[in-house]
Length: 528
Ligand code: ADP
Ligand code: ZN
Image 1: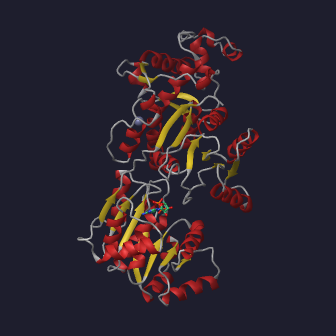
Image 2: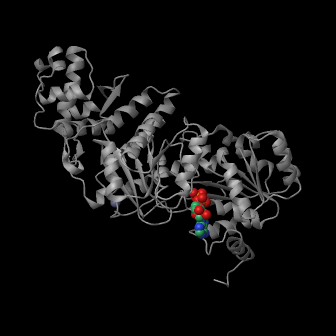
Image 3: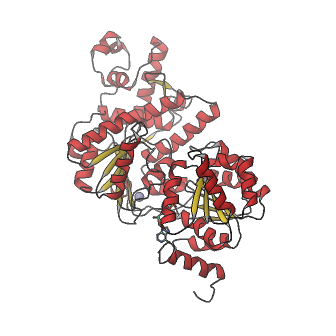
């Protein structure tokens, strides 16, 4: 209301209208902007697309001096500066991609007080030269973008961010605003501690994206499933399809194109010109589907992406949330669809087992994967699960697959015991380890060539699981892997018991499993 308008409010609103051409603030933008414009420190947790940029851009325009923005996204600085320049904002950047002359020009503009915003790579800010430069000019605020990069066990950790704790010591009078879209309670606390923002005002936005429908489907023939999704629900829509590897990006883009979908690929191995052309088609034209590795999307701002599909399992809920968050930024209905199967669990467990680095690092990767798997295997509302991970409580949403078609669960204790004892017997009696395929053949009593070759039809467990189909057994293996009641080992992903397996084998633990849904269209289940 007009009565509690402060000078900061009217100045901020004026800039919002005149410079950015928007009518009103969104969410907590106004409170954040007033607080920082008034000289306060802030820690802002806001989901992707929530409008974080204005939270530091407007205070920088309202305050005297230059707002210094620390960002790890060097590749985007040029675009950000171009976009601001087009709005009449005086912006520049300093990073390693520039030549000495270009750098000098920006430095001179800064010293002359002719920059509203200066983007800096964190490694630049660490240098004594840059710090002296900032001393000689006038800094209105420090904005630390992608602040979760300071979290040491996070998926985006940048050692250079640790040095940012010196900002407050060296420039105690300059307000700081740290912003991130990654906000588990643990990350939140770590950002506050490492950046010395305990006394800052914390602004935590809701992470719910109610217009996004979350769906996680059993993977049987992922390319065909994806094509069905596009044809039945998203014909002519813009979308993003994420794949883990460059080769699957190429394969998937080619497959979609062959079937008449306007699809282009995007990954770091492509030549820069093709990549830029594909990105620009996606941004400027309507109804283009981009098939990409997760390299795609940081900072991409396209409001009308109608679906985000994952053909491979993301490594963490942070990643999943950020990638799916690129759908439906305009607030209109959008779909987040993930195809998930046994092979995903085997592959990711194997990757972690074989990864370089400390045990602590491996434990952290495992914890992130386990949270992702718990979302995939839940029989409860996906959104409730997802938001709970980010520390936010909510009720069943009515707009996710488990709300729309409730998943059934069944007592899988006996099935789990049969499976685990087969793994145990092979190890114990034969000193052998096998992958899921052979174990399931043994359980079902199938006399395949490989079963005969190893005399596995002589095992006492041969055929004890003939009551379940292959899809069900794969579901049991997948969920036991997800629950940590079974593990994979080595190059071939052979199955081995874990400490917790003993509790199931000893009858001390029951196992509640999610029932496998019949795949849409009723085609034979075949995982590829
Ligand atoms: P984030 O950095 O949180 O992902 P951005 O700052 O890139 O989000 O903003 C997302 C989109 O929303 C941008 O297109 C931005 O211009 C737009 N936006 C932000 N604030 C407003 C507002 N108050 N009114 C209208 N559009 C806004
Ligand atoms: Zn739900």
